[in-house]
Image (cartoon, rainbow, N blue to C red; front, side, top):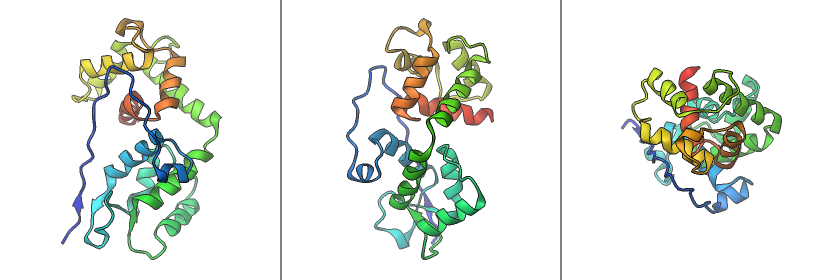
Length: 207
């Protein structure tokens, strides 16, 4: 019986600041925040499947050939084919062809911790410049709307785009836009959840 694809669910961000979630036991063991675990889990679910041989895995499993795609989606690209091979061997040592959630998270968390602050800062600054077209000014509602329309992202409606701005600038108003400092704070605080997640999705579409 062929494996069934799982459907990842998404939830639009609220205009009010979300409560900070408590890290799970797994997150604590891997020294990551609840937000970082949620980011990893969301991407894992984009590729996960329900397979009879892994019926006890409530998060499903991902095919080993999708491990690289999932890591790239998290911005944690393997540095070489040798590193990818080592990762696959570590998380699928018995060559089942599938990887459960826990070992995937362990690898993703390790790579997340190893990323240098300079690399993260450069990634955020580059994303900001893409939105402002290198002007160095504010990210405005029109910037977000333009990109959403160019990509034909119907899910990113005007109200959601406004919520993104309000989430980033602390409710200062849609017309206040988003400064580089506010954008950096959101990305560092929430990873790619909430506004950061949606901006990342849009950026992927531009590449």
